[in-house]
Amino acid sequence: MNQPRHPPRLLVKAMTVAFGTVAVLLGLVFIVVTLSVRNQVRQTVASNLESTQRLFAAFETRRQHDLRGQAETLADNATLKAALDTYQTETQANLTTVRADLLETIDLVLDRAAARVESDAVVLVDSHHVALGAAGRMADRWPRNRHVSLVAGTAPGSTANFDGVAHMGDQVFRVVAVPLVLEETAIGTLYVATTLDQNYAQELDRLAGTRIAIVSDGLMIATTLAPRASRQFESALAESLPVDGAIALDGESYAFRRLVAVGDTVFYALGSIDESSQAAMRDSMRSLALIGVLGIALAGVGSFWLARTLSDPIGQLSSSLAEMAASHSVHARLPPTGSSLELDTLTETFNDLMASVGQAEAETEAAYTGAIRALATALDARDPYTAGHSDRVSALSVAICRQLNLPAADVEIVRLGALLHDIGKIGVPDDVLRKPSGLTTAEFDVIKQHPVLGARMLRSVPFLAPHIPIVELHHERPDGRGYPFGLRGDDIPLDARIVHVADAYDAITSARAYRAARPHAEALRELWRCAGTEFHADIVAALANALPGVTSDVTTHAVLDQG
Image (cartoon, rainbow, N blue to C red; front, side, top):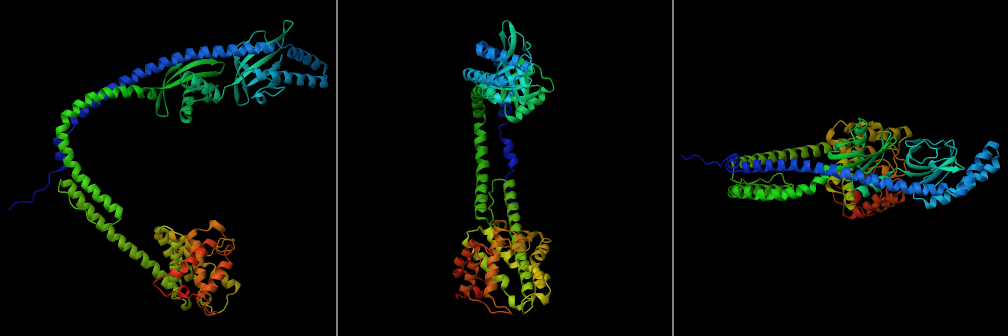
């Protein structure tokens, strides 16, 4: 007797013809070329940073020379010198009024000077390094009568020019200082200050074509690095980095070089090795492509047969799975491909699994719905006057949902939540729940506890969790006068708002021991009268539009009654 022939194992087919040798060869070549390219790029970036350093030095020298020339021109202003000299003389004589006029003159001269100087502030200090006035975009950072300390260079107040930095509050300035000399005596100093801020760093970035970092007293004050890379570079500086080298920032390799140090402020240029290597890698990949062509040709014949052998059945299986997913059906069965033992075993196992899922889903849904209906029936059984109330409210709520075009999943939550909305009344005593006459205030307070009681009951059953907001909040009102929490407006979930309107409509159109049922038209008028206070108007409108077409498995006299 012939034994049934099984398809060959997928592993056997995959191992007979493979790209192993070619893949290893290409991998080794790729690694060697990548390391070589990165090393060359690292050297190129370092060389570029060295060029940047020279360019930066030339740029800064020219900038500072220009500013110094402008400052020296301003320092020769006879009006400014005279005002400063007179101010200092009058200060000793304590002539307050004259001093105020002189300060006004100084401010006027500085304002005119600031308009002609390419800087952020022009500042005048006296021989004691106290600011007497400032003009320019950042003049507010140089308050009058505040002592100014400069870092590095020649001490201010001498007859020599000064080039350094100044810390004013949280701002750092690059400063050119020129003394004001009257009869060969320095009577004060004129500062031309440029803010070392983000704009300054971006200008250097555009000029040098590299990332820029400006660090003062160990803190990053301006940079064109990304925020995370900036923080990492600042932390690395705290560990005393060398003048130049390489560093990993935010998963990217950078070469860096110190451009210049001015006092406690240091300028760095950084170049991304990874970014710079991309172009070189593209060129290398073109060369590798030529090598790869040969490898592909050697493995082409075998791989073509293997690819067809594997791809056709896998494609068939994938198409079947896609169709099943699109139909959302767990009952369809996938046909075996017959191409390999593994695929056929996988297909059969998947079919068995989906059959089990379908059966479990059906049983769960049946148990779920049955449990909810049992709870609703148990409640209705306590009061013959409210029999069928939960079913009618559920049908009305579903109709409202459809008028509002809610998704099917949300409609299902509302449908079952409406069946349970009054489940908390199980905990209300019979003498209150079934009282044939009006309730006292105390009895009504007992009734008002049923949303909280119902929610407490459902919290012990995990699969009922989506319906708890309906049970707990279906008596809340837009005006905040509802219960149990007094929520207002849109703070009330939409599901609870829907059931609130459906519940009220059914209550009005249903007979009670102490009153007769009211007709459909009268019930709608009552709902519209209270729209905006007790009920949400858009829900009432949805109910009014839905009522002519509402159907249910139960007798809903409130729906069928047209007034």
